[in-house]
Length: 454
Image (cartoon, rainbow, N blue to C red; front, side, top):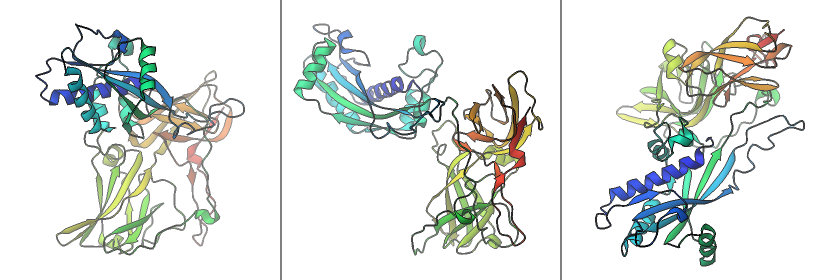
């Protein structure tokens, strides 16, 4: 999601797109020109009128598709439950000015063509325009060292749509602005998602989903000659065969075992590829190349593949918490075939909690230090989830596997389950046990994922 600079960021990116688009065309007959983003009443008109394109944000409206997401945000006592996004549509008026006959029409025509061929502000456009600490067109005396780059990370892309105003609407708009009318075109830019990062209460995870935690199994009856990935089962490392356990973990962790089920999953050589959904674009400043794990012949059949996610020191920095696209790559002779993608959530793992229980309060504060895997990037948000609150980690200016949390108004509690949340992905605070016949017992909260505060 984006921060409060998102509106200014969108205006800056649109201005950058228009300016670059005009520069790419040969407009020497028009002469010098500029692209601005000021109210129309502040632009000089008349005999001294410049060659100018002006982008003016004249209205902000709620986005109907996103306006109810994350609600309710408060419980009956007023405590924060979630941080719902503020979803906005931005309405711009694009106006052309010209010093000579036809100059305004020429500039407006090129601008309309540029936006017609550029209906989406891509993440690359946003990063290019806002690559400086302040961002192109954002005055330093107002924004200081703040950055609007989080606009490139919001979940939904920003779309540009022409909005054709009637003569009556145009008349009312220009009258309200108290400016001289010039050739104009209106656009709706949607959607901008502004979201707070304030701590919120989070419910404990569900430990069992239906009988034996089997959940719902649903799969299409598909027959294919190419590799087909149908399901990913997550569990503790097993020796021997590759039959999956009867229950699957909700998320993966480094060190856990994956059983990939599907069709045509064998060949001369087989590998499993993992592509992070957030950092997979090469132009992303935190670009993460796809990770590939080769599969031994003994660990694969035509319908199942077994592999264990690595835990070595290199894996701590090569992998990142978040959502991955997983695909199987099968080589037969000189041909390589790729399966469809399946999503896999890689959760952070809490390796140790210090100080060892119990944790003594100093005044009304308690300090908890966690070591985790994989490493947490300095750009990632880390929070500690308690049953009744969310605590943001102390600043970590470098990538690290050690996080410090200061709990204000720390409660006196025994065996308090804790979870580590990195960029919205929670660690798994439970453990599974099995009876003598290998049947899973109900999951319980793990002792090493709990703290006692005295």
